Image 1: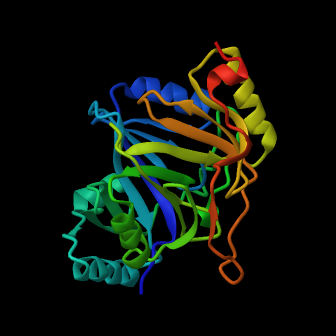
Image 2: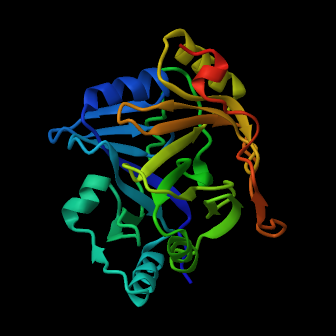
Amino acid sequence: MASVTQLGYVGIGASNVEEWEHFATDVLGLQSNGIDDEGNLSLRMDEYSHRFIIKPNGKDDVEFVGWQVTDEPALREMAEQLREAGIEVTDGTDDDNKSRRVEGMIKFEDPEGTPTEIFYGPPISYDKPFNSPRAVGFVTSEQGLGHVVLHVENLDRTVKFYRDVLGMKISDFIRNLAFFHCNPRHHSLALIEKKAPKKLNHFMLQTQTMNDVGTTYDMVLDQEMPLTRGLGRHTNDHMTSFYMKTPSGFDVEFGWGARTVDDATWQVQRHEKGSIWGHRAPAAVGVK
């Protein structure tokens, strides 16, 4: 059975691409590749040529999620698994591959209607090293971009899809959330059963040092940016992080220090609380 290996990239539809470029570079520390002729902004955080694509369509929600596989045979096997599960799959066109800068890809929707892409052959730019405007380093490599958390209406159905069709493994549960891994990162995907106006609850970026989280947190407080949850440590992945609003209205989690998964010894757990300490609402941490 073929399995996805990492969260490769995320596409976001936005009302204000210029505001996203400012937020991504000056606050998050991502590197901008600039805005192309079609108005799309691409962003780097490591040796990959891009990890985010921001499209100027006013959607202010996830536009697509891109999962990586090892090679073309794995991509073809994944396409067959999807079709056997009753999912309509289309091959990426030459224009699609050029747009994503990959060797090959397939496209489909998950059971909740989230546009999803699986690809192989991402563009790597070792000759042009990632250069953060804020000198922030991120934990990526085999662990991928970070994670995304999606709202779903039917948790059981969607869990079965990501586990049994895309080959992800369940890490643990917290109340009405299910967490999945596909590499040593504790979770690259989480699903929360909740009706919400947006599909995307948040995406997460993991820094290489706690100082990167602390200095960013201070900047958010000093500049009175929209903070969603203050500093805290999660029960399941042990990440120390905080949450803030993006220009599109969903959250970004900015964190450090998550534990990893070793499938040889890992056992699925259930937690009733999301945080060991902290992650309090803005009023509780004295934010105006």
